[in-house]
Image (cartoon, rainbow, N blue to C red; front, side, top):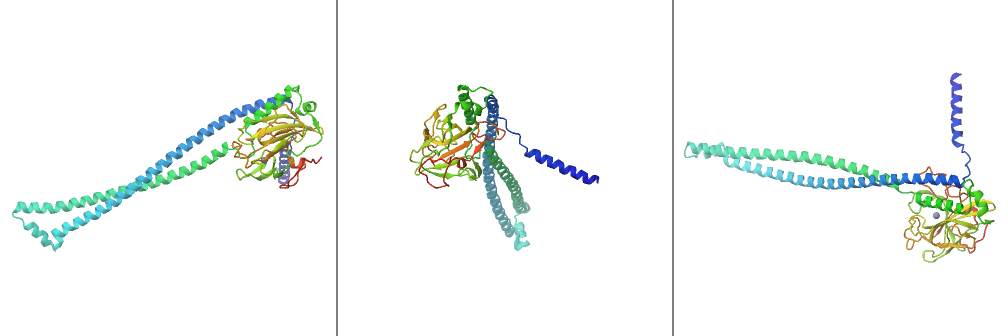
Length: 413
Ligand SMILES: [Zn+2]
């Protein structure tokens, strides 16, 4: 009984844990003031990240140096082993030669006619002194050669021992190099942002600053949410239109295999293009009436190229739209636009926007969100422009299926 009640208690406890994990508190509406605080937090995080990046880069540099040293050492070892191998071969040859020489002497003095030859040589002496001398010469020659052979054998043994040691050292160094190369990959991953549509923290900071500055200059107060304030300052609208008059969808939003790095990633936008876009300047329009809140026309952004972000009030609902890979932009922050305002030109071709590493050809990457820029998911490593309140553009704007060409900006609404 006791045991089963404990089991029930454990079961209930687990259920509580599960439920508490699924319970997500309702997000607090963001005010301009709280966004300012977030901006400060993000700046701090950015400074921290910069430090981390610097440390990681230093670590990579040191690892690289260590790998280079190991490579040189291995080459030295291999050269040493090659020399030792030659020495051993030479010594073996010397032994063979010496043994042959000993053999010759023995043959000459002893073996040819048995003991007699040696004795004849010894006894062929003119006198006793000569006899002793002859004996000594024979013995010295033989023992000297024997000593030499012994010495050679010892040298060979030493060389073989040295070779074994070098072989072991080479194995150890190879292992260390392999470990270091794995470490390098890990460090590289730490530095690289995997998503092919990720925004750097620097750019995120710029976006938030641009947005806060703009709404402040438009008279919004710190305790107002962007949504509340935008109701007064955003030009209202009722529909969203296709941002390009002609074209086709080249890639849906959502999970996909990245065309950049080949890994699985979440694509935070809808890709569209038009025929020969690499070599033609296709105009891009705002999807609805709105207010331009961020423009990057620096021609430097390594992911996404030049960008424009516009905020809208559509049927009383707040939205942000983002336009990436622009060859050029034609609006400024604070501009009030309509759906007929050209905001830029389609780009993203490596021949012209060579700095934009997140594009495989000229196209428009359109993002949509029902939130302002913020840092709600700022706990993660990567921070994105419109990742909070992410909406799939293809479900909110009227588009034909992927690859189907359109000739107007017809709306769904
Ligand atoms: Zn895209």
